[in-house]
Image 1: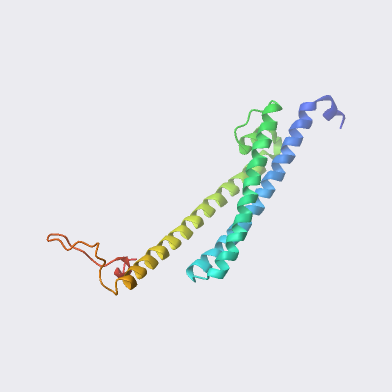
Image 2: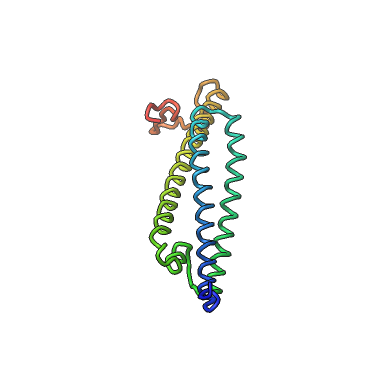
Length: 173
């Protein structure tokens, strides 16, 4: 403890390191919760379970707010590091500068967090694709109903143009 008082920079680095650990732990928790939520959401999307999708939407909004809070915490942490004389442009870079013998363990956690981000982004794209295809099919069905199964008057009947069925009739969709 005497060494910490003689060298206030060590105290600052240990505080920054502890805040970095806390940030990383909170991020890992939110990411794990989002992965679970996205798995449930995918099932709800494929089963067109509207009630569950509404419930999941509220949970997803709460997790988005938590991520927003973590982003603010990250920015404050980086600002504190800069004001303490540790120029870091990312939390990973900061931990690499102040972690000492804990550097490898923290880097492994950052890499896992990056891999989880990739998985979350992929799952988010899957949700978008499912939603977009459902919307397209729904629009085509409405159009069929509105025109009694006939082609809409906006389709071209001009010579030289070919019109094929919509995506709802295409087996490749």
